[in-house]
Image (cartoon, rainbow, N blue to C red; front, side, top):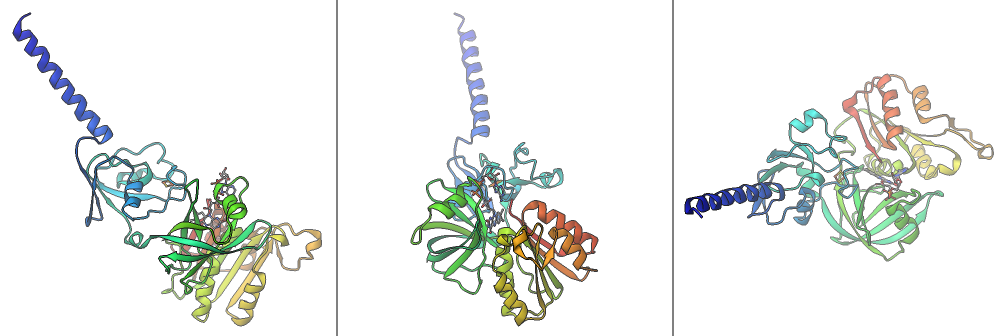
Length: 361
Ligand SMILES: Cc1cc2nc3c(=O)[nH]c(=O)nc-3n(C[C@H](O)[C@H](O)[C@H](O)COP(=O)(O)OP(=O)(O)OC[C@H]3O[C@@H](n4cnc5c(N)ncnc54)[C@H](O)[C@@H]3O)c2cc1C
Ligand code: FES
């Protein structure tokens, strides 16, 4: 065979394999160390391609991830300032075109396969992993339990009233978000209110399997739903079901501050059997004339002998409030309830930038 022809073929094969290798490297991240730079200050060398969420968690930076990386909660957003890939179809329900153009991505869907620079809120550097032990489990209604954990390691946890933690459910390692429900000044124990969801992974574990003395890991604190203490606006709180959790924590803080602002708390339930902590909030309203607790039942049962407000919480809110332009609102519960209530608040002129909510989706 002509030696020139053989050399040409060999050279061709060499060039082709280099192109394939380069392509594979871009796709799968092989071939040497990459660098993930966080907030231009922390440099994490990457030897194995993994998601940004996992890499950060292995480096003790805990990004909220209530769905455990399944792209269903939308909480794990980060801003990629350098090295972002195209938006994936799994990200589009949570990230609009404007945010996408600015580099916002779900960290659970972002594989770090090349050098990448990301930005996360500084507050997330405060989130840690905590080992906790179940100290008490108490039924509050037929489907809501109070969960009290003792902090094992670290021994104290600080949070802003309104924020949430994530439970890592033992055995299945599922991650779920639960709002702190207790008094933020008690730092060696934390409380949560967990509502049972039929066949739910985390709630079945908490309601039916977990026993006092059992240990698990939680991470946090997370979230920008917390009491704005610098404000002097009147406050409207609205909750349904276990949405009472963060509001309870916020109200403890307001109590400790001497209830300096006018607070009206609307709690929506179906029948009397969905109400809980009624005495606790009635006592608070006796202690502080500035505080009003308004439980409302949408379908009171005949034997409820209900004398309080009746109707959907949106109807009660609408009929019991006037101009709210000088107020701020804290809402917590199902997405449907929250968005219906925000419409009512809008119609009463409560400014959107003073409307804070956590949707338990
Ligand atoms: C920021 C945040 C704070 C939260 N705080 C609390 C809290 O304080 N207390 C609390 O009880 N929950 C809270 N949640 C909800 C909680 O994180 C879980 O989603 C919920 O407990 C269900 O978890 P699971 O594993 O039992 O159900 P999954 O196994 O995740 O779900 C089982 C099935 O039930 C459906 N499902 C899931 N959640 C609901 C629901 N709420 N209603 C009806 N169907 C549902 C799912 O679509 C699925 O089909 C919060 C959520 C967020 C995002
Ligand atoms: S962890 Fe839930 S969307 Fe990424």
